[in-house]
Length: 487
Image (cartoon, rainbow, N blue to C red; front, side, top):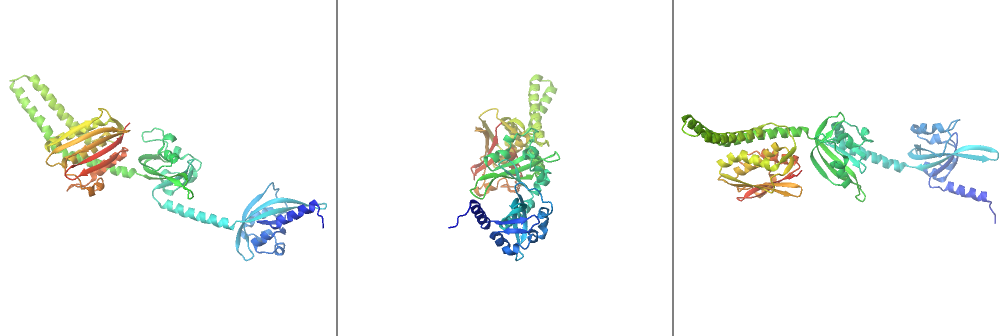
């Protein structure tokens, strides 16, 4: 039996590990020649050991990648601490390009009294990895092209609110390129302040609340800020992003659109609808004003005759003047083209004023109104002129639904954090199959109706973060239920 020394054992083990390593291995001279190669490198390159030892590494390198390693093979090689990793292409014996990762480390060798340096190179075939990366990049490009073809702004954020993607429409609307947002807090750039000019803390921002809770939300009326400091009206939807594996929540995607022009169009329609309502109520207003004017004319004639106590007539005349003034003021307030202004208002007072405006119409059509409420002061955050327009429209529709007269009930209740307003009539009702179409433009149950009044009314309630529900039975009546958030 031959006994091996420890150094011989170590050498045999090293040679075995070198030869049968799963990755390619080579010892390369400082001028790039292969000094020693293993079988795996032969399999990767298609060359035999003898063939490889007759060429150098630059000769196997793709011509476009030679510059990546050329600085290593000269008279003054760099000092290497640890490893240098270079991804490049080499040419297989059959001419095929192969992507490899070269890991260079410096190997100092001693033979007798001679000291030499070589490179120990680990060669990993990364062709499949590169192909997967190409496929991923291709898919990313396709996805980005799809995103960029969409006119709505779209962006994605991870759970730490870091930007994942950002399409062209978002860039054009907001003015920021994706590169400018990679290291920035998106909230501080585009959603820092609300319509009233108040700062929005991240903790109360709907986008970030949805992000933390993994919920879907839809906001119909908000503002985003541009890079130039200007703002624009937006509506947006936030949806959770789930990974493709176990469905784990990993972020949110936000889709938003500029609704500035849509809001302008709605404002024009609202003004048109106001004028239409004023015109339709003109007959009732004229009738209501004519009555006190007749009284005033009679009292003036009596005063002129000097046959009675003037003080009594002065009091009655003053009351009649106040009645005329109230009607005209409410009519002017309705028709006045005020800008949208949200503030605290008592919904009971708003409804009282609406009833006063429409009382002449009710009198003409033999309609009684019954108004009940749980509290005399119920505050909501609203534009009272817009809400008046809604209530006038609904009550007027109720009057029209009862051509022979009847009763309209207005009920106001409190439920959790909302106020519930119900407007009930005893009219002809709406067929069940048509209820779902109520509120759509140009759909109306009236012969000459356009449907725009209800469409605008539904839009106003939606902009106040409220909802409208319709219940109706033919020949029994219709109930419109409106919910609005309390302050």
